Length: 520
Image 1: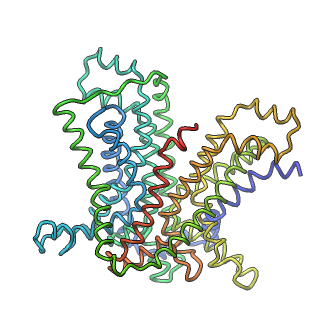
Image 2 (image 1 turned 90 degrees about the horizontal axis):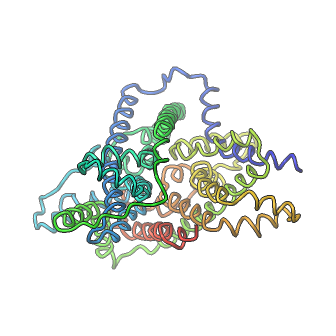
């Protein structure tokens, strides 16, 4: 039994990373390393589009995330507290819902044309530039949240040195303040880029063929499993390259964070023209990233009010129950892995820990294919359908994809508990379960709660893996919205979209509130 406890963390890591192993093993087993099953012109198109969307979104995410974070953290101006909250809320919007609302806003006879009383006014955003802009609106909060904390932690000593050197604002920003926040900005940017690579709903609706779209086309459009897997392997290599680059960049700038001190610099109170510029810029960004899409959904909801499809509540119930159950399972397993790693450490446990967090960097479509290969192997071994199309397959995909999102919070929580408490529970002879339920779970409640909320937000917005693996006739609210938009019934998607955004917005606000943060 004692030996099994030392194997618990390695076994968990191995199981969680099974979809990635399945994909790689299948690729090696098929022996087609020449990638001849892939149409070369399509491969070039996927590569070009993916690179443009990725780097274009990265540029806009940095621009929006850094500017909003610096204003919120360093300046006090009219409405600054309000905008600090507003800049977080786009995180509640799945990118595809932002995309649908903007298409409705700019389309022929759309809302903009109605507001201007010019029916022929339209702006065609169904292209690669449109999808890049929409994705940046949805992803910039990742950089904003992390960079704001870093900018707010700048010490008063640094600000005094900048003042003594008489540096201009631009020079101080680019040579002092921005380098101080590099680690946080990189971390936020990588999260945003992983989400962009994983996105399927937005790029598919905007008609931009990226790798994510190519995988779905190969499998469902052409029925070509080998091409889908080969594309997934290429995408996997891109993800690993990004992770390696991020790791090296983070190591290069690691020394910077040690310049922070406990005495934080106070915010600068803006007056006159500067106050007006900061307010105007904040209002402009909020209008495009939150107010317009929310206004469009509310307008469509008003138009559709008399013929509302109340079955959306059923889809919401399915989403809530599936997501809450999945989040609970994932957070419980994350706690189990961290607990086992703390009390029964081993080299295998360290390796499996790293393997288990790889899934968060892998797009949902790739995880979905890995799970399908694994479940097909099990089904063929038993000669009947055992796991295919089951809730197990779907929850397993969520576990593999989002385990890292939960284990970060749990790991952080365990790191705050002094080792002397471990020794005390051993000295007093507390049983294993008593130690877990009476000591560690109560101490870690805020960290487990924040991990649970992060998981819920991610799962509510997930689309590719759910599309691939959901049980027959079991549509979630995200899939219902995707189907309505795909059938060009945009205004009908308002009610389910508002329900989804409302639930994720509550989770985002809770995550950002003292209810969770205040107890740490």
